[in-house]
Image: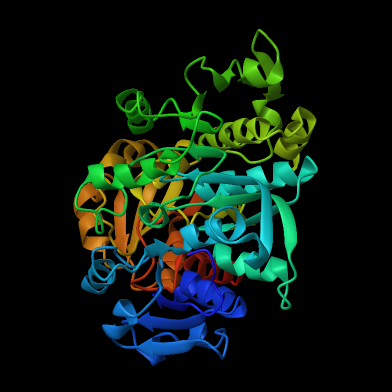
Length: 477
């Protein structure tokens, strides 16, 4: 579809991505209908932000919306195998995701005269099970410091279509950016066709979202789509230390077309690596230096934790490959403060530190967080299980955790996996959990919210969970 104006577009799933896509396409002149299986009372917060020209069909998915559309746009939370989408495909209606839509609107596919944002140099895209948001934000920080104009969005918080709309302005004046910097999830990658980042990074792959995928292989295949359309002129940055990304590289070697660089905490690699407390840069094709050179002392990086060393290396490699000056990268590593809900220090009370790691929504994320603590940890975990293997935490819990406090639907499963190792409590609410933690904590301890689960059993999302944690902690005496 080369033109949007006058076309019938069905958007499946309201939420953030659906609302962003609906408002953007409506502004561009499309005839937009949003359909969601949820009822109006469940979607009030999104409905109030929808353009009045957009039609809403809630509580069901009528067949005509899928048979008569010119295009169907799917929100990331909607599985691609539901029957209405099969109906659309059988009637020859293209089905794409919100990420693909944003790519076509800014880079490829849409007629030049209809674009409201032009991206001159292409997309910089980050995926992986953990670390995506920090790496994406740090990369954007670096590119801005290096003098590039960027647009930041995707799975990081605001839908990319929403950010395009904000950037363009209400009159849809055409504007230009150098790069679109985007965090992409496996759900978003499932629905791409043309999406092709000029620099991509696959940070890690550990079990996650197995409540949606039929197998780990399906999850890995979805992540690997980030380099599906890349060519020899593009770049791919991979984690050499991660078993699955390394396996993926060697198993798919013949089909990987982009130039590949690595980052590693354990090995000297072509790319970025740590040795003797320093981060080394070994990208001779870009730097022109025959021998690896020191980029920065790891202690000078402002964001702390072993996982953030990996995030810093990935972002640095991507920025360098995208043309960012080295000095801007170094300055960014020294200045970037990190993100909310990612090992975020909240306050200290009587010598006890309270840390908000609400973004730790899977087992691997919690493992990385625990690795970074030397002080005894009182861990608050639990929520909605995503088919996680909590027994993988046993060694770290035995080594690092003083007390375990459980909340939410997964409490029983986590207690069965870990409850024999440390003092374990089940709390009726997050407030109850924090009060138990305060009673258990002694000077020098750390109270860490790192749930290893999704938030949807008790909270709107992980951000809501993290902010409630912070509000409760700030009221403690």
